[in-house]
Image 1 (cartoon, rainbow, N blue to C red):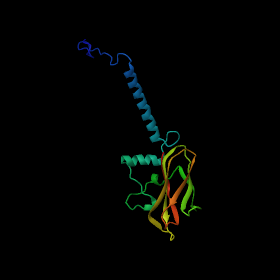
Image 2 (cartoon, helix red, strand yellow):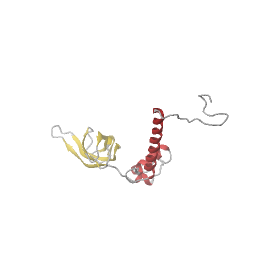
Image 3 (cartoon, one colour):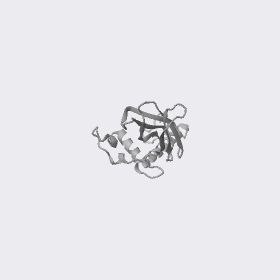
Image 4 (cartoon, rainbow, N blue to C red):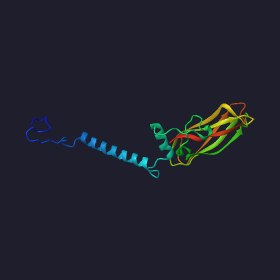
Length: 186
């Protein structure tokens, strides 16, 4: 047999594909094992809801919406104006970011109005890119068009609190209403 041949034409003998375990062969074997473990963890996350692997219903719903297997649910405040029905999984709220306290305060020095409050992370996960938002109201109690204000925080560790301040620049603003849920990426 010539050295380049893998199978003998006369007797059918096959040469082994890996003659010795070099670095490349070990790396490929470890990569396949790691890939199989990752797929097993993904399967466990998708099929269970409990600790430590389970996905939450909202996370599973978001993945299915992204893949096109489910439709995006509308907020109850929108009342289904775009014709998309509410799904049972979308109505369940399990937000880990809680608006612990909030109030309007007047600055003693210059009389400006501020919304001051505290957001608490009650989960076991770190949240990034937090945004707390408020719709501003005028003296008559009506929501001011384009009167949304917000505060941003880079990250919030599990069990910690974020004290925020939002300046009210609109001269008509006398009250506010929080827009929930608080946005953040886990």
